[in-house]
Length: 183
Image 1 (cartoon, rainbow, N blue to C red):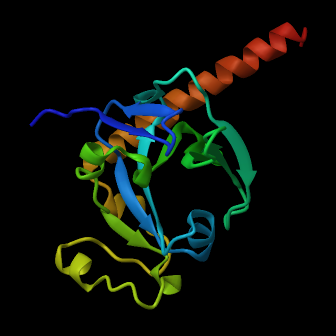
Image 2: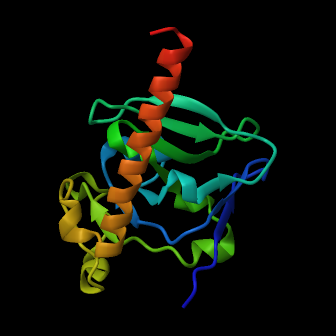
Image 3: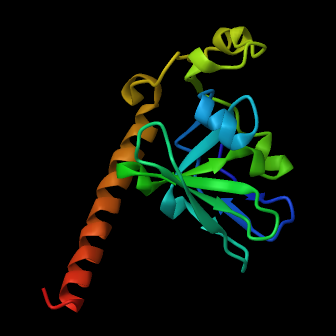
């Protein structure tokens, strides 16, 4: 089965985007921070390498710096017209990955994305019942999880390659900045 790109947009459709490869993983996070940020019982993030995510509209999002429980913070991309949160970038090596808010996928794409894991369920809303998800084989964790115990081998390799590529690009940018500053 070949992959068909996933497409999405904000509510007013000023910002459109495409995901050009299968997501690395789709995570339902039930932490209180994600509940507050999304205004819902949990957030559903579809993770993809930055180079497999592209804004396809001429309009560009603006970024809001927000705190995160890790202390590394996150940059949330929002539409400048309707203010919908479309995706996030977290700190550290996670900067190499785009965390797409799955609710912003268009109807056809949204049907193709399901949670592959539920995390921080110790703070989930009481009425959220994950029994059916567990029966379906979807891992449920009270806190965070070890990637190598949940992610498939292909996604783990893609993540490793992506981080290596990202760090190499960052080093090149730093060298260029240093050369430009005469250092």
